[in-house]
Image (cartoon, rainbow, N blue to C red; front, top):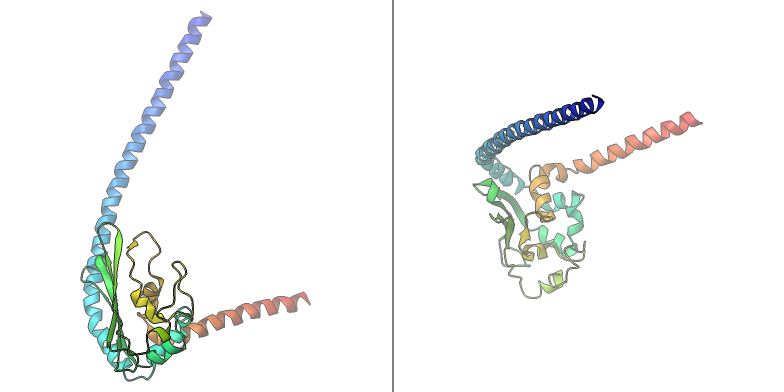
Length: 244
């Protein structure tokens, strides 16, 4: 009798265990179905966001053009905006700054299909450094997950290219700050895997400087940072007074 009861208890435990496993599997399957449904909604949302972004890119374009026309009347606007930027300022050597005095306009334009890439264009007045009036760098996102990068070949006037640091060698993927000319950036066109670190200079120009260059021309970014430091120093000072 005791043995029979033991067998029955074991069978009951196995049945309960099978029941729990079955319920768990069913729950996970249902969860996966819901997750798949959510992914479809997210994909649809991404497509809608891109449609809206493309629409507003067209709306922004004439406003950007209007802004560029006004900037042309402000001497050394882009030079000062670059020099006031906490990262871009380190990329201009002394010769670059002389060239930037001839810069009249900057333009950043997404492709019509914003997922496929964008182009950054620097426009210059006639100058003693190079023949070009436009220097562009284009980033095309390819289907296989790589980025095709093309840049304008700068037609330096006699004696100007090599003396401006264009022939300096790079160390790895990093640009030597303040030694190599900013203009060598246009020749950095190695194809990159999309998952790799993207062109930092391009990202900063496109996502930070371009949306509101006036902030950097007025050095508002530096003032905000300074205000933050003052507040921290003030807090530290108050703590010292309390301690005394």
